[in-house]
Amino acid sequence: MGQTSTKQKVYPWLIVIAWSFMACASMELLLINGSQYFKTVSDAIGSPVSEVALMMTFITITISICAPIAGNLFQRFDSRIVLTVMGILALGAYACMSFFTEVWMWWIAGIVLGAGVAGIGIIGAPIFIGNWFQKRTGFAVGLYGMVLAGMSMIIAQVLPIVIKSVGYKPSYLIWAGIGALMYFPWALFVVKFKPEQIGLKPYGFVEGAEEATKNDVVIGPGVAFRKAITSPAFWILLLAAAILCNFGGYKSNWSNIAQSTEWGYDIVFGGTMLLATTACKFISPLVGWISDKIGATLTFVIAYICLAVAFLLMLGFHAIPIIVIIACFLEGFDSISMKMLIPLTVKELFGDKDYSRIYSLLYGIINFLGSFATSLIAFAYEATGSFDIIFIVGALASAIGIVFLLLAKKLASGLVWED
Image (cartoon, rainbow, N blue to C red):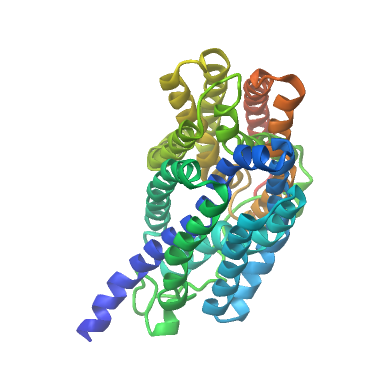
């Protein structure tokens, strides 16, 4: 009995740690930090960075298609099998890049990689952690994000050093091996889809109370799905969120930007830029606290202001390394907004009634609309010889995003909420 009680208290938190490692080995290593290869690969194979970066477009589109499928697979099959197949797809595609010689090969790998990452780095952790926690779910998700950010920061700094030391081809194999060690032991021997599979209950479960299950949906007042998605407020909010979704293309180009003739840094400094952007995730709890105090929409406006400042600093002071690092940190509000402020704003404007359906539709659309951002930013430099234009566009887009947010909030105030 004592062992079961201890396991009941400890195992849910082990799930959080497990998913931190697994998501780091997929989303952070393969996607976010994988962008640090673009300039080196471009120079090696003789293709423009924009063509190499097009791999991210294939990844993003594949994720949009495969994420709902992955969620269904978790429901129907043993999670160990599903997670193992996804890990093989993602890490296998990454390792194969060591042998590529033509740019189209990276595009094909992007499709395979995206199919694997869709269920690991995108939807896996929220689903599994949600199953394992009936109470303190928010804290558990926050802990997951902070541990993930810490590990990602280390990778962001070390990965370019490895590329510079041994070359990009051996580096792919080295990091694929490290990723496999970070991923498969947890996926095979620790992670379970639901606590009931090993005779446990969700963390905070009270005996005699109604047990929360994965498919439970908390129904509260809100705007009905059909009324919400046909309202101007929804589509204006979608435009504000779509602008933000495209900002992910900036951090995917940090290494490319750092190594450009215009900026004059090296690949290691590009890693430091990505590290600074990732470090911003550590203030997620503070952003959540501000959102609780003044509301999600206004907090989202503050995030957009920080992003506008970041772009202006990049535009005017990129010759000063410390200011570049500060600007990169502020650009991290993009990730915080994607993971926290967009879903919170959807809930604030449209309520709980059909929140999941409304948010899922919005996320699917904006994810697709942001799929070309990485390659377009790289192309802008190739076409103009300067990155100045992308920072001007970023600052102006941030201002437009603020207007859209405030307008969406005003229009949503006129919608009728139902029980």
